[in-house]
Length: 246
Ligand code: SF4
Image (tube, rainbow, N blue to C red):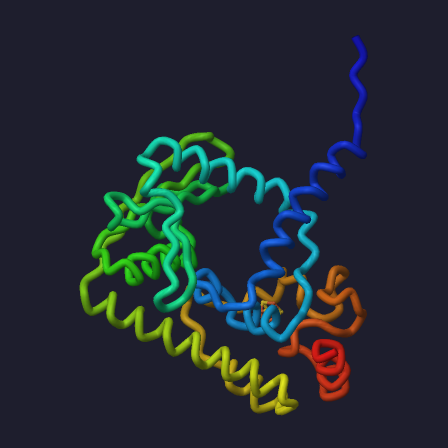
């Protein structure tokens, strides 16, 4: 028997996973519910036409995430899986129990033993699904990649929280579409000022690790010096605007 390490095969599969992901991402011309839970500049950048970032380092995670999602879905009735909703922001939840209660599965490499260990953006995402489906209850399954055990968490919100979240999502959607329109019309500074919204604890800028930050090795657009407009000077903004418009 002979066993060879074959980096070309791993690369071939990684490329296929990323192509598939990019395909889906390129068709994302709308603001989705998940965009509401992270740095607001990420969706702004996507909508002004910046290419998807280089994702080589997360191909494995994409694979694990999709397999886990499909596994959980086959455990329940088919009609509960992948509920899509377009009412406020396009969204699809992993599972909607009884057609009413959202259930999301997440993967973590760190221990989650207390509710405070759960990522705020995950909680916000699940609460947003709950608000969309007007459910006071939601479930989160968290699979620990190290221990290979999962934990289940129940989240409860009241009717006022549901209404507030629905309103905030609508405001975020309308503000971002308007800012993108203004940016593409050439009023760059006004557009960026509109995106300077006060971030909540669960919606912080992740600039330190973000591939869109200018100067990073894998800046979007692949052009040195360009990237997230939040970090560009006047000249960079003008150059970038020409790139994204034509
Ligand atoms: S560089 Fe910072 S502000 Fe820009 S998209 Fe990335 S995380 Fe958001």
